[in-house]
Amino acid sequence: MNPLRILKEAIKSNPSLKYALGVLGIAAVIVIIKTWDIENTKLPVITFLALFGFMILLLIFSSISKSKDPHLKFAGYVLVYAVIIILCVSAVLILSAIMFDWPTPLAKLIK
Image 1 (tube, rainbow, N blue to C red):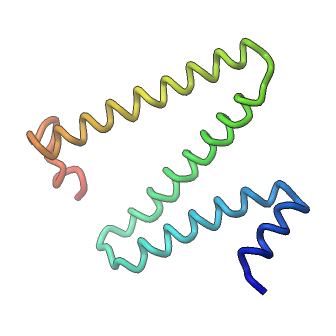
Image 2 (image 1 turned 180 degrees about the horizontal axis):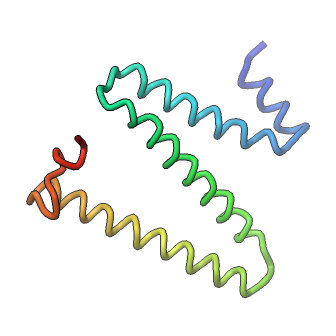
């Protein structure tokens, strides 16, 4: 018996089980981070919260994309563009913290 095949058959019989695969992925990420023996013990918790937040965003995006209401579609577009802008600004700030030590050096932020 192949565990992946069992999971696929279970998802076919009960479609809500597909979210269990996402939760399993989050648990796997936390276990991988724990095995790295990182001194900062808050990192796995922060990682879990970030991934959980992204899972909620993914659920919202999928439900909005299936909607027929034009107002809800507009709200979905606003949410998508807001997330893209936030990610781009975060990437620029992290890059500037690495390259130019502005606004704060990255090593200081990680401590």
